[in-house]
Amino acid sequence: RAAARTATPSAGVPLRLAHRGPYQAGPVFDLLQREAVAGIEEVAGPPGRRRYRRTLRLPHGTGIVAVEEHRETRGGSGGGWLDARLHLTDLRDLTTSVQRLRRLFDLDADPYAVDERLGADPRLAPLVAARPGLRSPGTADPAELALRALAGHAAAERLVERYGEALDAPCGTLTHLFPEPAVLAEAEPDGPVGALAAALANGTVRLDPGADRDDAERALLAVPGMDARTAAVVRTRALGDPDTAPPDPTVPDSWRPWRSYAVNHLRAAGDWEQDR
Image (tube, rainbow, N blue to C red):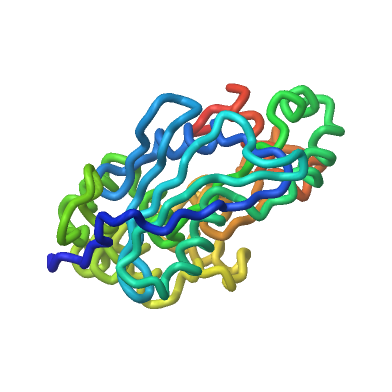
C-alpha cells in the first residue's frame, strides 16, 4: 500500500491531559502493554515509568502520540494530569488527537461518583479502597478496536503487516497505520473480519461518539462471528459505556450505573478471568 505521511521527529507538542480525582495509571498501562499490536503501538519502560506510543490516522494527516505513566497522581488532591507529546503532520488535528487520548485513558470520568457507588458494595469495597480512581479505558480508534477485538491479537498483527498503511519514515517500532475498514472489507471479503469491516465501512455499524449504544450493539451482533462477549467489549471501549455488563450472572444490577468499572476492579484484583 501507499506510504502515509509521517509526523516529523521534532520536539512535538507537549500537553498535560487533565483528569479529575485520583487516577490509577498502572492498570491502564498494563492493559495497553498486554494488547499492544506491533507496528502501530508500543509500551516501553519499567512499571511506574512506562511510555505508551501509537500511530493515529487523523482527518488531516497522521500522528504519533506518546503518553507517560506516573506512579503517583500528578497534581493536587482534586485531580492531576498525564504528560503527553503529540507529533502531528497537520496541527488542525490537535483537538481531535486530544479527544481520542482522553477517551482512551478515560480522563473525563468522575471517579468520586464511581467509587462512592461501588464502594458501598461489600464485595467491591476493599477493591475500591485499594485502587481509588480506577478507570475504564476506551480506545483512540473505535473501528480499529472493534476489528481487533473480533480478530484477536495475533490476527490483528497480521492485518497490520499485510494491509496497514506504511509510514514514510518509521519512528522506532512504529511503522504503520491500522488498515481502514474499507481496505479490509476488500482484502478479506470472506469471514467475520471482512464482514465487520464492510459493516463499518458502509455505516451499518456505527461506532462514532454520537452512535446509539443499543443500536450499535444490535448491529454488531448481526455480524457473522460476533458473540455477546466481544460485542460487550466493543460497547464498553469503543462506545464508552460505563455500565456494560458482560453476559455473566455474577454481575449484579446493584453495581449500576458503573458495571464496567466494577468488572475492571475485579480484573485488577485477579478475581475475573480475562476471557471469562
